[in-house]
Length: 185
Ligand SMILES: CC(C)(COP(=O)(O)OP(=O)(O)OC[C@H]1O[C@@H](n2cnc3c(N)ncnc32)[C@H](O)[C@@H]1OP(=O)(O)O)[C@@H](O)C(=O)NCCC(=O)NCCS
Image (cartoon, rainbow, N blue to C red):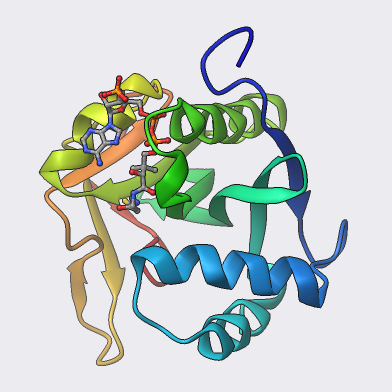
């Protein structure tokens, strides 16, 4: 591998109104997700299809093989005083045989570029303690901002289950609580 660690991946961004996911790519993404999360390939495919235009998908290819995947949820969220255009990051994963080559950081840098270039206010994700260091290497920071969502009983609940809510880029908020206006990422 030459150049910066992980720099030899080619990235493509799939979404309903741009480059569409075809059955082969969907199957390869489903197989990659299957390495980490226990759903069948068909269930994964049905799930990804059901997301429609709420999500876009960054796929990292090494030659023609899918090595890395991230799902992005683009949304407006709001506090009492401000609205924010954000990207929620979900399902970050790298093929198990290609871990520790820098591909995880590399695909997250693509996310950062989209946030910067498409003028999002910030990105948000949640992770457990063991992955905090990984996301810090990707330029993300833990935020102590309180985020809520409204559950199916119209009750305001904590938006995220994990201890660490990570944000990119670092920022301060005008309000105590921000509603993520939908399901958690
Ligand atoms: C997390 C994940 C995406 C990292 O991918 P990767 O390509 O191996 O990561 P990188 O090679 O870019 O890692 C860079 C650094 O981040 C840290 N890091 C990477 N994976 C880590 C992990 N699982 N735990 C703790 N630190 C980790 C290490 O410091 C690593 O440097 P090193 O390889 O020199 O030790 C990958 O392990 C994965 O797919 N995990 C399973 C799915 C998952 O849990 N996703 C996160 C959902 S929040």
